[in-house]
Amino acid sequence: MRRLVVPAAARVIIPTQRRASAPQPTVVPRRRVVRCGLSVTGFGVCAVFYCLTYTPSLLPRTWYLQGVVAGLTASFGYAGGTAAGALVRLRWWPSRRAERIAWHVLFLLVPPLVLLFLWLSTRWQRDLRVRLGMPPQQEYDLVKTVGISLVTFGALLLLARCLRLAAHGLARLFGRLVPESAAYCAGFVVVTLLSYTAFDGLLVGNLYTNADRSAAITDSGTGSGVVQPASVLRSGSAQSLMTWNSLGRQGRNFVTKAPRVAELNAFTGRSALEPIRLYAGLSSASSVAARAELVVREMDRTHAWDRKVIAVFTPTGTGWVDNDVPSSLEYMYAGDTALVSMQYSYLPSWISFAVDRTTVVEAASALITAVRSRWAAMPASHRPKLLVFGESLGTYGTEKTFGSAAAMVDGADGILLEGPTFANPIHQDLTADRQAGSPVWDPSYPSLPVEFASRADELRTLAGPPRKVVYMQNSTDPVVWWSPSLLWHRPAWLRGTRSPDVTPDMHWYPVITFWQTTVDLLFANKAPIGRGHVYKSGAVDGWAALAPPPGWTVGDTLRLRALLDR
Image (cartoon, rainbow, N blue to C red; front, side, top):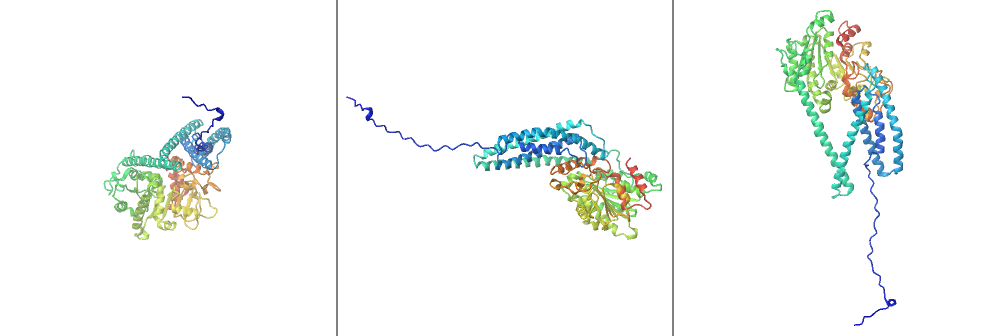
């Protein structure tokens, strides 16, 4: 069969029709709002916070504590700066050139700035220690301080990166089910909730449990040299309504550390009586009301109502009463005293304050009301002086018991309060309504017989009749001046004329000053007498301003303080 050949010219070429493909979208890489590397804004704010943490506060800090504080503060600054940078990048993304310039500027400025503040900190700490009568620290401790701060900051940064990695992992998992933005939000929320649960349940919960267990063990012990009293005038004796073991550690200290009659005779130069000291521990009775009733029955048993002075002491959280305070009254009145107290907790004051302040209010109210009711029922001509004392958290319970300044003035012959807390309602009202022109650290309130003293010796020059209420508040006591408002508000005690004990180099910075004052609380009881939260023999000046014995002089005050300070 013959093939038909078609000439090329006659061939018709039919173009092949190709399916039109959809236009390919331009792929733009997603920019990360949260960066993998160090944040330039975070590093900048971190450097500022790190430098400012070396500025002075109310009390000097040890080198290791300063290192931890600097590391923690720097981490707070880095977190805040990183968050601010992330918010900025949501609206405006800086160029790489701008970031490089910012890093170069930081590398040029931060090292000399840190060195400057480290050098200044040695001078500030030295001056502050001299001002407060404390020994200077060695210069080489600064190297250790920097090392600890870097380790602290690095550990916290590593922890934060691990949490962020977990949030990103969860976001990718959730991204299979929900849009990307919702997935990242869900991942962040889940990690935050898990972190809070771990922190609150594992860390805070275990710390509280261990603190409670440790405090309970301490409370069950007995201090060195403390033995059961033989005197019928003491709780815990064989004749007492409270057993020796029920008093707790601080109660046993309270009833046994009164001065001996021979010591009272030597100081007063006349015949003295054996002091009465009574105390109810947590296990002395099943309830607060029962313990208060038991104390009053002990007062009946020991004929406490026949003494010249009856004093009710609201202790600190552990049940502790500074022995210089009751001893000063016993020396002043030659033992013609009956001093009573009652435990409401065995935890430190800061834990009791944070967890449950109602316990101190219930205990103070029960004991003061029970004693005062019996005292008020006595004929006015036969009543002993009724004095009330509170220190630290005890001042809060005392104020809440009376309810107002006028009730405090009318409710007892004298009330001495040392180291009131920021939460004390009456103290806040009196300070806010102080006489115009008087400083917040030494307010004047002439409408009532109420006196404030930032230093004990101020009470020696008072004119007129004895006061009815005396607040002793050291100007360097962080228990008095700490407040949550330090986070965002400059306090009045850092404005205008300052107390002589507060260094002029201390300034207020948002967040920084709050954190520094919080750290000062840790070592407030390690300061010298009359500084920090240490009052001790200064109570002699307080009692002399409230209820001086007949013929009492400033010389007697100085002599007694010297005796107690040995």
